[in-house]
Length: 293
Image (cartoon, rainbow, N blue to C red; front, side, top):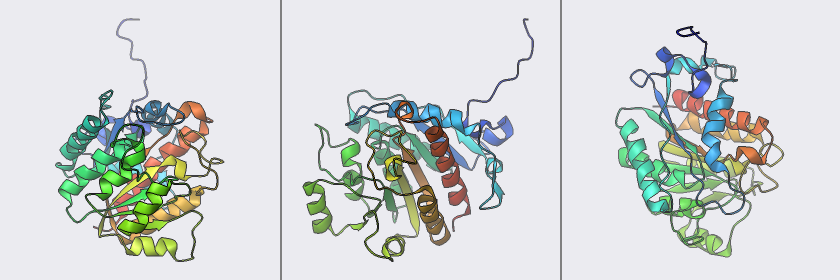
């Protein structure tokens, strides 16, 4: 019937109403980056942002751990960035420009990938605003190749490009190339391999972070039993409570000024994985909102 009011679910993170999702009043902005042109095993990360946003509609707004209503923080879901097909360096520049735009408004920015190359532009935009920034890079892989599969700006080189410009600490790494191990040793990078090689490994990582921190999470940091829907799953990974426990520790001791959650390939695992990824984005916003300023 023409003009009949049909209820719809808002197409934004947490399916928030306009008063909680408007850009003007939001404290956080999520930027979907649906790219997977540099994936190296299983593609499909380009579908990750849409799957995360759709799954987030099933999340409850109230966070039991922190005792806050995450929706009331105000979360604006930006339009998805159009991929720059065939030129990862230009795509990194596009992400950097978008993140810088929202950072200039004083917003917490979170990029939803897409493959992990999205982290490059996002982290560098935050570095532009916070010159003393350090990056906590959580991933099953080191992503420290100088070039991989014909590009220096793909997911296999993301941490390398960021580390050329600011301090990067890695957590969760459990597979890497000899080139990457050599670079870690020569550059003196802080790495907490997984499983941790000492009881104080994570404490040392946090102690080495600057006051303002950008957090980058590749979902393959999680064990495949908890996150199978990724392009390059690696056994022996972090458990959910280990990951969010680390993030909470960081928030309690540092200021989280930006983040990304990347590499969900929703068609490569059960539907529950999209919900888990959405929950991680939700927790990142909550932790950042309660981190020290």
